[in-house]
Image 1 (tube, one colour):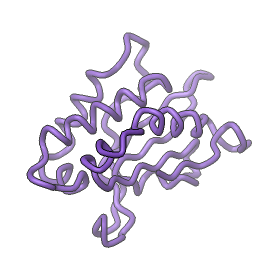
Image 2: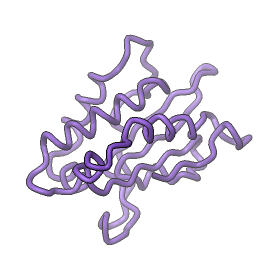
Image 3: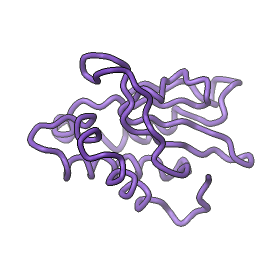
Length: 151
């Protein structure tokens, strides 16, 4: 996981990154589960300056400000050009922004979809490329709380 300091430490940020990173880290403490999930690049940026390189993460999270509230866009399928990811390409936004409270649930839904959809020992990025974004988008959106949805 890569996370910029976000709004807690950066005057340029629109949203906080570290609480999102902490919430995801707390949710995934089981080493056997992490081993089963395998390698995934999760990148979190607190603003469009992209210090966390959200666009190049297999899963990217970008903090945005909408009407004075923090919202988070989730992208999938990004690659930094490394051997583990393939040719560099930006991730694609999977829908309207999520509230901070919804991001860990959306990521869990995405990872559950991956585990249910992958072929034997297939990596996350390869599963996303094989099946496309729609199953992940559907599961992430189903994990939303009943809050106002940002555009």
